[in-house]
Image 1: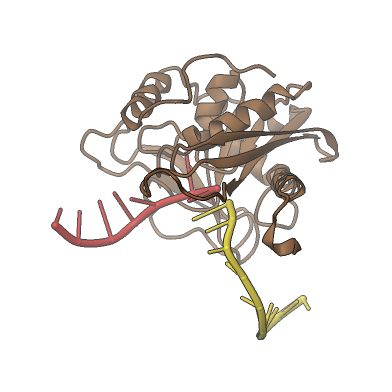
Image 2: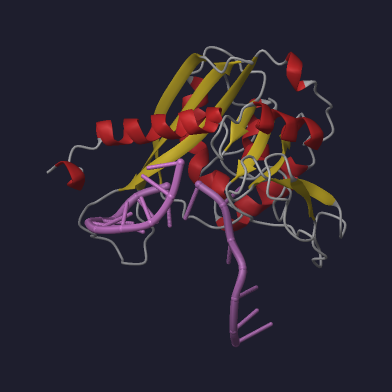
Amino acid sequence: MRFRPLHPWDVTYDEAVAVQMRLRAMLRDDVPLDVRRLRTVAGADVAYETRRRHRHGRDDDEPVARFVAAVVVMRLPSLEIVETAVAAAETSFPYIPGLLSFREGPALERAFEQLAVRPDATLFDGQGVAHPRGLGLASHIGLLLDATTVGCAKSRLYGITRGEPGPCRGNRRALLAPADPGAVFAPGQRIGTVLRTRDGVKPVWVSVGHRIDLDAAVRLVLLTTRGCRLCEPIRAAHRLVNDALRRTVHDDPRID
DNA sequence: GCGACAG
DNA sequence: ATCTTGTCGC
């Protein structure tokens, strides 16, 4: 798969925000998909290792970290693995809530470029449009890939909920845009779904990434969830990045 | 000024 | 995300 070169990754905070505002206008968040007709679905995830080295520079310099990203493509509805891709990249862009894609993006780009098969949809461990500027990780990468993507985060970044989802799998609550001054969403506008994927466990925050609508996004998450809180494509990608990271880190303290 | 804050 | 030991539960 190839990335559209819509912008560089090496940007300042202000430039990153400007990029998000520009890309937001290209989003498609209203494409109704029949998830039962999807043939493949992918999951993507990232892990990283802060570069352990003697700090020569100033102490407030952001440490360079080595990121490993993985994409796992599965067939539907069996969820058998069709293809996997792993790649690494270095970044010094810090973690800033709302700018996660600029930290994980470079590694994800390389992993997707290794992918021969183009999945019908990809699930990300992070937000889609449920983001202060409507462009979370899943939406951002979806735009660069010009592909269908869904955000499935383990916790909330943006948006408010009236009460909590019911206790059973499938129970949900609308995630609404808060009444922020200068916000990109109208107050109360629906931006996602807080979804219980398993009885009695913490829900996940689902939102549209790109080229899909919220109803289909939620259906796809439920369709790919088997017994665990997180859907299988993301879990598989998570295992892959962690294995790859430890496989390539020589001085892992846990191996001494 | 004080919290909130994906991974 | 990563840093970390034991521990409660199925």
